[in-house]
Amino acid sequence: FNQNSNRLRIAMQKSGRLSQESQALLGSCGLKINLREQRLIAHVENMAIDILRVRDDDIPGLVMDGVCDLGIVGENVLEEESLQRQLDNEPCDYAVLSRLNFGGCRLSIAVQQESAYDGPASLNGKTIATTYPRLLNRYLKQQGVQARIVTLKGSVEVAPRAGLADAICDLVSTGATLEANGLKEVEVIYRSKAVLIQRKDLADAAQLKLINTLMPRINAVMQANESKYIMLHAPKAKLSDIIALLPGAENPTLLPLAGNDDQMAVHVVSSETLFWETMEQLKSLGASSILVLPIEKMME
Ligand code: ATP
Ligand code: MG
Image (cartoon, rainbow, N blue to C red; front, top):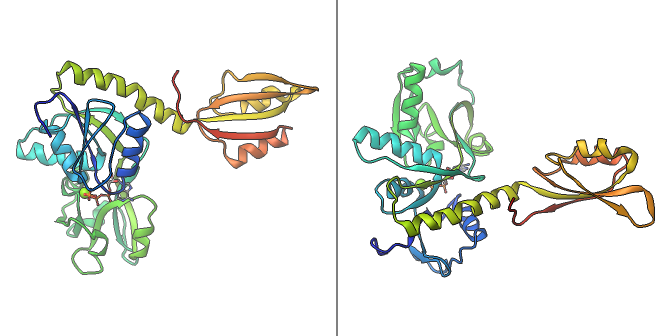
């Protein structure tokens, strides 16, 4: 891992909730990554890029210290590290290049199901276990709540049952883990997604050029992921009603159907997927042969 080379260095999570999607995103952008073995560093074969695979907690620091040029990490981890570094007077500069469309979760306070909860003031004098002490501390301050924070690196959800804390502040996506541990979510204190960040003082022309190539690709991949190609047959009399039901379809392609004067084929790139309810409405307007197809890449 040559610090002086002008290969672009990207940090991503080695294994965990963000690793597959981070890897898939870079793969979709045309990076040929050979990730076999348990290597720390992977060289991209077709571009001047090296991938550093680390624990997610290390990614913000690697970028803030300028060891890596780009990083893909959850905003929760990024913000926690930023707050900690501000407190410690350590470098904490970075730029967010893109908010990505994966890794969504919320940082929430949860208490035991049977305990009475009546707003943040109920937390006064309580002990709260968390992996995110700085984010929690900021929230408690804003709310004017005095509580004791216990920092745990893992298994936060068992802390109340183990008698280590009265409440927890942990990441939630579905809430199933909380429920399985007899806890109820009472406050959402932070909403997070994965982000692509860049170190602040990046100046190398070759590296900047590479980033300028990557960014439109990343945006194109994200847009394509959210978009669908929709095809259907519509009765001419109901065309405008049908088109109005298709999300983000200002300029549909209309094609005649051979041997059928009453109907037309409608093709649109929709900004989101079609829900069953919409498909049923389309059908009740007389649409038929409705197809919803994924889009792999898209450039406007
Ligand atoms: P590492 O070994 O890299 O430190 P980790 O165990 O700290 O991994 P993961 O559980 O893999 O972290 O989660 C990584 C990130 O995924 C979280 O910081 C968060 O941004 C995001 N995430 C999305 N949904 C969830 C969820 N339900 N629970 C926890 N994290 C989630
Ligand atoms: Mg971690």
